[in-house]
Amino acid sequence: MYSVTVLNVELSKSIGNLSWSDDVNTLGAELSFGMAFQDITKSEKLIKAGSIVHVKKDGKKFFVGPAVDEKRNENTREFTCYDLAFYMNKSDTVIQFTKMRADDAIRKLLNKFSIRHNVASIPIQITKIYKAEVVSDIVKDILQIVEEQTGVKYLMEMRVNTLYIIKASDVRVNIDVKELKYISNPSFMISMKDMKNSILVTSNDEKITKVNAQAYNEANRKQYGLLQMVHTIDVEELPKAKNIANQLLKELCKLSIEGDFEVPGNIALRSGRLLNITLKKIGIIGTFLIKHTNHTVDNGIYKTQLTVEVV
Image (cartoon, rainbow, N blue to C red; front, side, top):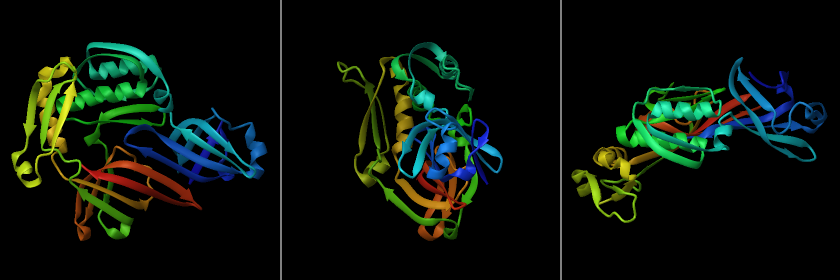
């Protein structure tokens, strides 16, 4: 059972075509719904662009955010809403970090914009100036620096009104996809197109051509041919070049497996989380990253469309 409220007024009976989606490359979720023509007048004073929308499933709130766009035609009003990460995606800032722990740097940034947060311990030091940068992009960049140095991925996830930053390996959906009858229209692609078996790391200074570190996998090169990538980093990061090269090789020296399928709806299915899939009949077994989700509720039937990638 779903409920949609604005200003503590229940609107669920007046709305239709409820859906929401998220993507691993974008912080935040998008939610949309429509309202029939006969409900427009009574709802017009309650909901409009800027109104804060609350959505619950079985009494548990899972979405809070502003109605950003409103489309009107002769018969309906259609709203597009975003969760509270919207404000991080639409705000720029100037900020400098000097030998500051990554977790403290993120907290300093979020506190500047009064964003509630729960940030995991990340002791890697950050020294960098960000000028006219989007708030969410700054957090992503800090986490990218951490991943390059340590190989540890962190997930940013807005849960109702709090931004969580946690190790991606700690966020698993407690669902095992084991039977084809559980999913609809499964399609998987196995490819070597993004594989790399040689990594060169150098400075991003255009005047410097020296390769500071290299990592390669000779067995993989013999099997698939040379697939090389040059990765550039800031001068201050050069002492960590070898570690960065090793981490990139570990991530990229493998076949990619991506898939799309539909399952019965579940609000725990969110991009960035991990999902175990065992489909022996088609030879797909492993832990997969959820890259994109699209949730739809139509005539009381809740379904979730997933795009996944093996980790």
